[in-house]
Image: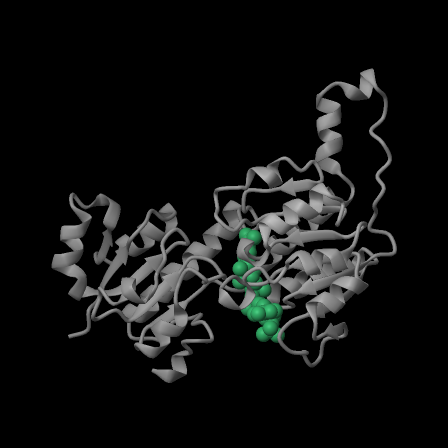
Length: 322
Ligand code: NAP
């Protein structure tokens, strides 16, 4: 018999818990008197895991569950799940693509405007009473006018950002592992070469070993003293020590960050930079969008329980393989 019980290892939004609890098969690990004993006695019954980003669902973790068939990840980025390991062991991983694309692209644009036009700094000026006591906030040295943006990782969100930026009159180029057909933007095979040619570097890259610290000192130096970095992808993509140094020493002009390498920790060196705009990973964080993401987690697991194909398997574990 197929194992059909569902495990939620860490707290998740009520919509997910309620949707899965309705099956009568959900186990919330934080509600168990002794989670370790529960896992020892029940691991064999678990067929599905609903995973948030706060737990590393790696090989050793998944191998506790001999009958695991699906890991439904809350979020489009699934770098906290070892999808390659899952693929080799007959486990499907699903994520939550598309439903968050427009929300994250909106946030990226907000963060870009905040950063390049110093909007948080000018608001702080007003709240400090300086408008009355010292006069207007100084004119900003940077602007979006006449600028070129290089997008690192032109996927679903990258394309939604590009569309918005085109309507702002910003020229678009991009870098990824390969050139894409049917994309009207210039492709750079080298991130450093792209950084040399652009005014704004917009990172939408996923996390993981392949992208760790690819935005490093060399890339920041190439971006130059009027250059702006925006990171809406994953914190691990940026070498934060190199970035703090670049911001402090005017190697680049400014940075806007929604994501950090060791969230919720933000390095003190970055906090100290007045030319950094820092957001607490709010890219998709509206009730509207988080509900759509949560429902997709539920629907993927319900599809599995009823013997249907999960809706959004990731590329490492396409359903066709099973
Ligand atoms: P997607 O459609 O899968 O796009 C990912 C893009 O990354 C692809 O175009 C891929 O292009 C590129 N890529 C992968 N590995 C790369 C590498 N080593 N170097 C350069 N480019 C690489 O994903 P999406 O829906 O746009 O989401 C992108 C990421 O945004 C997610 O993985 C997540 O980390 C992040 N995100 C953040 C928030 C937030 O709240 N801040 C919210 C949602 C998502 P190639 O295959 O051509 O390289």
